[in-house]
Structure formats: C-alpha cells, structure tokens
Length: 403
Image (tube, rainbow, N blue to C red; front, side, top):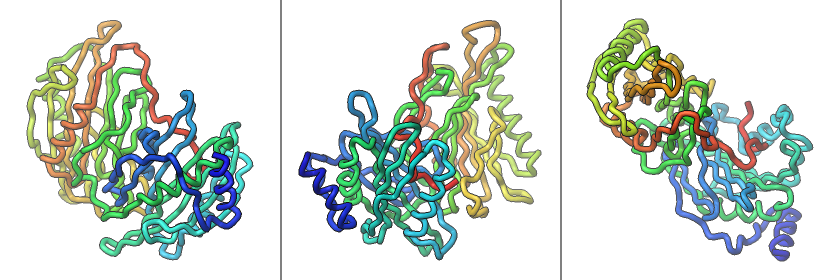
C-alpha cells in the first residue's frame, strides 16, 4: 500500500503521465447503458445504486464498516455549443460548484489529459470539504460527437472518496477508464429491460420497487417517479413511470376503477385536442392483488403531443434540458395498472397505480416494460419503515453538472 501511495503521488507530480497500477482491484462485468451510448465496468466490491437526476447514468459505491469508502459516478450531459471542449466544460462545471452551499474549500490539485476510448479527456484531481467532511475526487470529462443525428454528449466519470483514502481514487479511475466502450445511443422506447437497479421505497414505506438500470428515480409525497433520458432527442425523458398512491373515500371494485380510468384518459385526450384510442383493457394480477390494466394511445390531431397526465396523477415529467429538441413522436402510449385496498385506519381506501408513459412507444413494448416494472414492485405493510432511497457516497460533488 505504501508503494501504491508513492506511485499515486508521483503520478500527480508528473501530470498523470503514468497512472498507478491498481493491484488487487478485480473488476466486475461490463454494464451497458445503451440509452447513453456507453458501457463500462466497476470494481467488484462496488454496489450499483439507483440514480436520481436526469443526466446521471450510473452510480456505485463501496463500503467499509458500513460507511461509504468510495463512489463512482457517470454522467452524460447533452451539449449544444459546438465550440465547447472537454477542457472548457471541465473548468466551467467545477467553477459552478462555487454556488453549492454543501461544498467548501474546493481546490483543483492537478490537471491532465487522459485518453478515454480514443478521445482526449480533461482529467482533474480535486480536494474539497463536503458537508463538513474532507473529500477528494479524480474525474475525467470527455466529449463525443455523433453525426446522425447531430448531437454532442459530455461524459463525466468520477471517483470520490474521503480525504483519508486519497491514494485510491487515481488507481480506480484508471482501471474503470480502461473498460469504457462507446456505442450508438438508442431511444429508450426501443430498449427492453434486462437489469434492475437497487430497491427503493416511497418515503411513507408503503411499497418498494426496483427501477431498471439506467433509469433515474425520485420519491415524492404521492409515491415515486422514474424515467430514462433520450439523448437522441436532446435529453428528453421519453419513457417515464409513476407509482402513485391515492386515498379514496370508500373501497371500489376493480371494474369501477377500470371504467373510471378509461373515461379519464379519454377526457384528457379531448381536452388536449388529441385523438384518444383505447388499445386494451383487462383484469390482471399486480403484487398479488386483483388489479386491472388499461393501455391507451394519444396521437396528434392539430397540435404536437406533450407528456400526458395519467388517470392516477396530473403531474407530468418536464424536459430535462432547455436545449432539448421538441420534435417528439406524434403518439404517446399510456399504460396503467391499478388495484384498491382498504386503508389500515378509518373507512378510507388506498389506490395503488403504476402508470407508464412512452413517447412514440409501440404498445407491445409498453406492455413488456409494464410487466417488468410490476415484477419488481412489492407492497409493504402500512406504517413499516421504508428502505433507503437513493443514497450515494458522497451525494454531492464537484463532478455534478452545472445547474
């Protein structure tokens, strides 16, 4: 370990001309993130976590004595300005953290050029105080250009650790960089779910669910929302899902719920001057309960379709990027699966609804995604404590995109 620290220090002094070898750092399997056009591997002792921001692609953490000892994050940010280089973006994003109240004493210890999949990356070694704890981060920014369609993406790969483990961040970054492979980005609506992220629950502990790997998720008072960014459309969340829990005055039958859902979807389409078409309605099991599923399509009549409100909730997912393109597919598929249970206290009931919204999504694909999401859903006892949501180590860093 002493030799490793000496090599790490020497690498910093020499401008990272040679990264220290990461001895005893077995790597896991390569994980693919086709929506962002990238694949990489992380060390075997790191656990994948669910990300919480639209441009976060991957987050993983290692723990020692139940405390986070290292975190690896990958972000992908759409870039509209052609003139912006990796060096310029690195300096701008790090400088923007001066507005972050959680970070103090931010210092750039070193700068260097690092090759990432044949691209010239801008590498940075930082030290800072994060919410009272001294930390370090080794990161590399690299920009790729895609001709068809014409898009630019800035990737930010970061390894963070407590200051006491400073010597470990450079070796880990070097090993992860070796595994990076760039692929052609794909529309999320065309992707099948093959892997899941970590389990999360709503703040009230009413249920838990495992978002697909590469989806970002955030809990809220009504339940949980999750989505996947479409980089081919400039960063819009063209696929989103919402797990919504609502209170009812009385228990209602599955048939009554289904009929109300169909009427609400049709009314929403009419109000938005869209064509509404019921594709299917059926009873089906969900979390061991008698539930129904409705699949509905809204398409353009005289104006572009925006992300529609579901029968269970009126909230919609906002575009993640101001520079995102607006040429969305002309149709939207909405799938909703719901059931109703008596409340634990009082005469009221609770309705649990999983709502999937897919811009330009094929109905068959929406059904397959709905089935996968429903498989990962678990109903919890009322009043039980929820599991941690999207904790990371550390939760905020100078690698985060500028706000």
